[in-house]
Amino acid sequence: MGTSDGMLLERFAAHRDQGAFAEIVRRYGALVMGVCRRVLRNADDAEEAFQATFLILARKAGAVREGASLAGWLHAVATRTALNARSSALRRAAHERSAVPRTPEAPREDLRPALDEEVTRLPDKYRSPVLLCYVQGKTTEHAASELGWAKGTVLTRLARAREMLRSRLAGRGVVTGAAFATVTVSASMVAATAEAATAGVAAPGVGALVSGGLKAMMVAKLKAAAVVLVATAGALASGGVLLAAGGQDKPSVTVAADVDTLPPKIPHEKFDRFHKMLLPTKDELAGFWDLPWEVGIHAARARASAENKPILAYFGANGSSLGAT
Image (cartoon, rainbow, N blue to C red; front, side, top):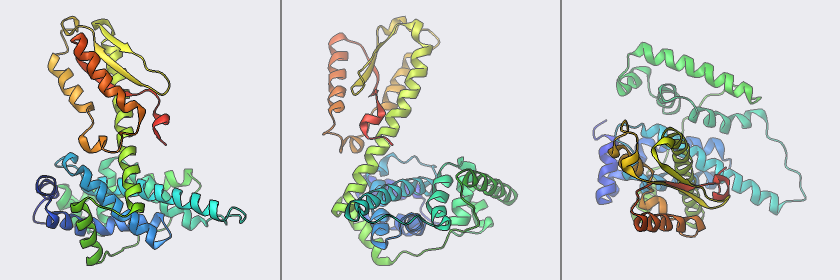
């Protein structure tokens, strides 16, 4: 394959290397476009979702971990972005043609977005070979080489993935039997997407999808942090951790009452790492200045500074009020 995905992303994040980003789009454009076309019937909507997916990657290029499956990351983001675009399109259609009842989709059409949704929910060891072999069209030998597995392992996990997908789709009332269609992405689309990513400029429709996608990712990160925080707070309750509970639509802030009173089993360095893990990146905060709870971050920092206490975490107390779905 030549230059690794991680190296290309690093070059783009550090130097805004348009050629490096164009190579990423060439490698994974068919995968992303395939998702967008399966979820969205309208070709223009699919192209907007396609470009939005890669613009989200451009904004998050420095945060994608080296060694992580970029195919899996892009498939999940593309699925979420396309589903959001479909919801917006359906709302517009309902508003424009409110007097005309919508014809129910055929089961075959229902399968297309459902299939991608269920693929995103597979454990990585099953999702990766599915994406490589069924979505990107690579041979089992190529997949085994890329994943560093034996060919027998790839075949076994593909069989298990098919069973899981059939079972989950049947649970949703969908009868499966369809395959992922192969799509192509034109050189002009690759170039336009790489140029937009480098310039950081997008058409209004694409920009709205990017903004919505970044906010959804931020909310997901805060929710995950909240889960970890609750578990940590319970374990450290005897160590002097104070929970300052927020209201229904206000942030909660956790402050350590006195680090010297924390249980000796938990080194202070762990809290530093925990804190850094929860801090949003500049890109994640870029679209959030209009949200009231953002002010809570500054208030929390001011309080911690005034009381000389380290902040362990902050998060929205009510995720649904932040636009979570």
